[in-house]
Length: 485
Figure 1 (cartoon, rainbow, N blue to C red):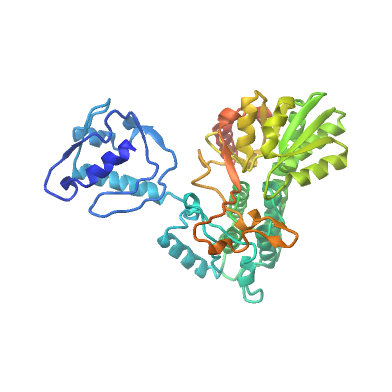
Figure 2: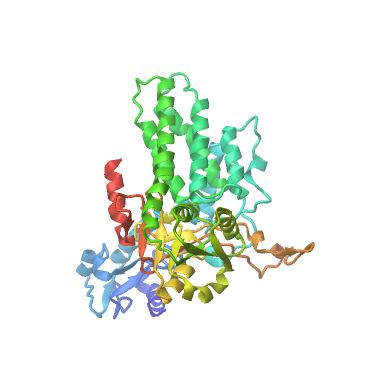
């Protein structure tokens, strides 16, 4: 608050448009670290609103790239004043704008220029722009919010569209919540692309390695409009594009298509199916007779681990924690009970009452970020936090193909908003808040993911040779993956 007051005072000074050569300000005084959280004002005579340049980039003043230049203007750290002149401010302005350009477009939805650019891109690709739905909470106004009642496929004319029918069907399944879960979405995407490759024919005077990549771009944009791509889907798409670009130009079309289909099948088998078996083998070692294991939601990997452990005659009990509005835990409960595993079902509001009897917490993951944070279904961080308070070990099970080079420390900047109508409860023909869109002061927030700090996670079980690593080892795994590729 003090920093923002000083910044506002500095911006009102004549030195940013008048004749004064400089200004002594205590903007950095007594501050050894500062955060570019929401910089709402910028110099050069205009007022700009730069939405969320970085959610939490805490860096020391000496680490700032402009330190040598600022120091030459008389700047000093260690709690002393800083001399700021117009040339310095212009340098800072350029740096700030360079940071803004790095923001992905999908988290700048409230920026009209970005929306206009997106609309032009989709128009070139002959894909309709999906409109946002309902009033959005201000903290998340920079994210897309769609309604299942208006799927993008309603605006697509099948005979005239450039989108492959398999991709159109997949987009509808994504938007309607028929295909959910990182693994299921990735496998469905890869199978759809296999069908696209089978039906592909190289045009005359074109090269397959270039033309096929261009053909996939509108398909990816269409799927992203139906529902934002997951981190695992992004990694799978990168893999497919890399394999396509590696095809030699002299390779025959049928041979090239056969190679690509084999590569996709190997990716599914190695990165998802065999990876799940390797993780289950390592995770079973952590399950002892008499354990009470808590799980949250419906992770296909965690369910597979528990079923494998039960088949190996491990005696344990499972507490399935669930939350509205998806209530995915019911599907996990159905699968486990069908196998004969003893289960207890509770909602997340009662998790603190059951944790005293829990011996281990097993959680799935949507993605594992480069800074060690775990991105997973909303509510996961609350489970991990309460488990930490009760000294219950938290084990996250995650395949390495979900490891992501993105860095995130909060759930505000980059997230996904689901259909807000899912929060409305319908009972006996009565729908409360039926016309909530007409109430200007009411906003419904249906978050999909949250991020869990590495401090709350004791161990990550992966399909690597070691099997178990701390969250802080994610950058090492990413480096090894890049070398292998």
